[in-house]
Structure formats: C-alpha cells, structure tokens
Length: 230
Image (cartoon, rainbow, N blue to C red; front, side, top):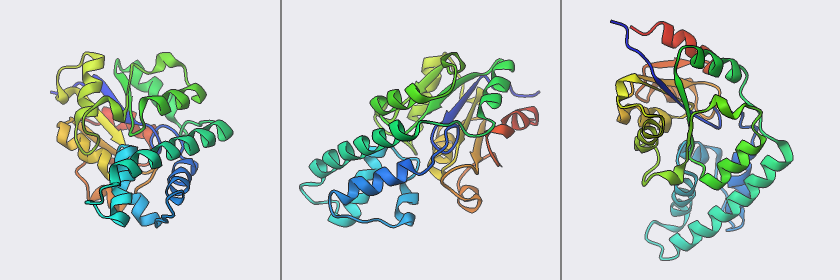
C-alpha cells in the first residue's frame, strides 16, 4: 500500500531560498572581527548546522575547544554574524529558489502540510520572512535553531515541526535539504522520505555519502518523488 505523506519539512537557505553569498560573507566578516580567516572547505563542513553552533565550531578549530573565552567569543561573533547577515538581506532582499512556489502549491494540492526549518534563530528568520516573496498562508510552521535544545544532525527541529502541525508519525513525513546535516537529521528522525537537493551548499558526492532516500536537482522535483513513493 502506498504510504501517505502528510508533512513536508523543508530547509530554507539553499533549498527553498536562494543563498546568493550573503551567508558565507556574513561568516567571513564576523570571524574577521576576531582576526580569523577560514577556508571555503571549513565553512562547507558546518553548513546546515545551527549558526551559533557553526561559529563555535569554527572558533574552536582556531582557539581550541578548552579555551576559557570560547563561550564569550562565540556570543560576540554570533552577534556580529547576525548584524552582517541582516545588512545583506536588507540590501539584497530574499529570493525563492526557482520552482519553489510551484513546488509548495503542488504539495498543498496533495493535502500535504508544509514546514520550514533552519539553523537561523527566530529573530533572523523574522527578518528573512519580511522579505520573502511568498504568501504566508503557504507555510504551516517555521522551526528555528533556537526553538530546540540541539540542532542538526539531531532530529528535534523535525519533531518540533510535527508537533506544530499536528503530525504524529514520522512515517508520514518528508524532509528536504541541501546539506549532509539536513539528511542526517532526516535519517535520525526516521522520516519516510529524506530528500537531498543539489541547489545549495553540498555536492552530489557529499549528499550521496549521507543517509538519504532520494537526491534530486531541486525542490521542483518533490512532486515526482512523492508520486513515485512505493
């Protein structure tokens, strides 16, 4: 019997929303305030994580995890990151990934609830949603990194999305993201469909190395994934 998907939990930046360089630029600028430079590979490794956790990880690589000032440095660097990213969003706006609006409509027509989840905190998400060219009624819930005790790869943001939308079984959930951490969270949640998209931070090879059920070009293919679920 074909399984019924009742909830789609989709990542934001790189999955449903274009990342036009504002996020990497904000990381670079914030870390530069601490005279720290990182490589693109270091940044790719933390994409998908809660942003405060990502900054702590990057700082610990330079300072050492036992540095007594790590917590304070993380807090101040994260504050700088948030300021730089808000400025980038205000200057450039927010654009949906091509095909996102139609994909969300397709999910809705199938009777599927839609939740966004993200490693950004609630304040940052509020700023992003202000510029998001999308009918607010298209989204049933938004879950942020600071809504839960642990971000990805823990499954708690997915569980919280289920709680907010009244979905009780992970066997009726599809998760979608562009990073290995997105896929790890979907796997840990036990989602029926755990879909990687190639529109964002990680390559096909990196996504294929993570637990998944499908890897597709973009969210535009989600209808096909659901229609071919057996």
